[in-house]
Each structure stands twice: as C-alpha cells, then as structure tokens.
Image 1 (cartoon, rainbow, N blue to C red):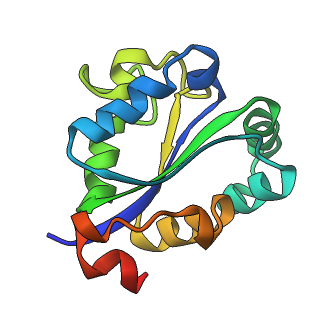
Image 2: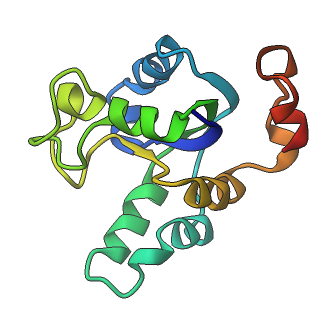
Length: 152
C-alpha cells in the first residue's frame, strides 16, 4: 500500500443536482482525508490544461465548454492507495455500465454527464492538483498522515 493524493472534481451536473456533498461524503466514509476543497468556476485555460490529452479529438471543445459553464467542487484527497480506491468508489466512466453502489452507478445519467472526475495515476494527480490548487490552498494533516504531507 502507498500513501497518495488525488484530485476529485464534482462536476457541474453533480453541483446542479445537489450531489457534491454526497460525493464528498463517500470518500470521507472510506476513511480518506481532505487536504483541499473549494467551489469554483473553471477557467478556459484550466480546462484546456486539464483535458490536454483530448485536444484535437471531436469532443474536446464540448468538454471545455461543459466544465467551464457551471461551478464545480474541486477536492484534493489523501490516503492509502487513494487513487485506486477513489476510482473504485466513482465507478465506470459510462454510468450505464457502472456498478450499483458506485457514485456513477447510483447517480450518473449519461457518459457526458457522469458527475465526477478522479485522477487515474499518481502522475496525473500531481499534474491535475497543480491546475486547480495552489500549495497554500492545501492544508497539512500531519496529525493524521505523519511526515508525508509535510514532505509534499
């Protein structure tokens, strides 16, 4: 097991439907710790950096328009194997294929409105956290996590 941090975004459809708190609660109930949390509007620049791997694909502009069109809730979460654990909690990208009991399985409606984003690797998490949070927006949790947070 490895102590990691990850970025979670409760997307616009989650915020509009009043599910951001439920999404946050799912991760807290798993025992993960919140290092950063904010309601925000994503700028076009942030959106393009976040979705850079999809640039040039037919759906890229739609992704950017959607994430910048309404507020989101951004979270940085830390814990043992948090990336894999959060992705399991989130469920499959397509809500129709997501297992009941996952966020997308319980609340997702369509693949384009699938409520939540979670980093898919440690490298992605570090890149994505830097897009949405400054270092001074992340709170140390040394009492819970020891020297890991202080070292980051």
